[in-house]
Amino acid sequence: MGDDAKFDRTELAEDRTIMAVERTFAGWIRTAFAAIGIGLAFKALFGELEPPWLARVIATIFILLAAFLAITAERRACRAVTRMKSHSVDAPDAPHLRYVAWAVAAGAVVLAIAIWLMRNADVPLVG
Image (cartoon, rainbow, N blue to C red):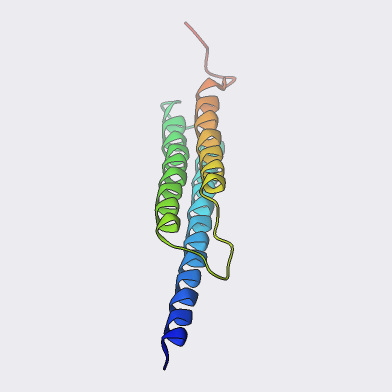
């Protein structure tokens, strides 16, 4: 087998790895959205827990976990993509990965804050 065939095989392997990094990033973002969903569902289903803040704490943990997952996924994907060179496929742009991850993280943080600012009908605001 000549050097050209070996080089082609290496290029294709690098392209497959880039696509795998992209799929893995998408999987982690889906996991972040699932964590947000679990947090919202927990707050909606178990909002009547005693003490009243307990459901908010548990929901906040899941929602902030989503923000952490999104940022971690972006950092890992960007590091992997910058180490490789695409040949036959379009590599994902690092800024686009960052935009997606930071949008998910920002949305999760805003949602966590909103959960704490929501007023329950049976809980007085002050005194």
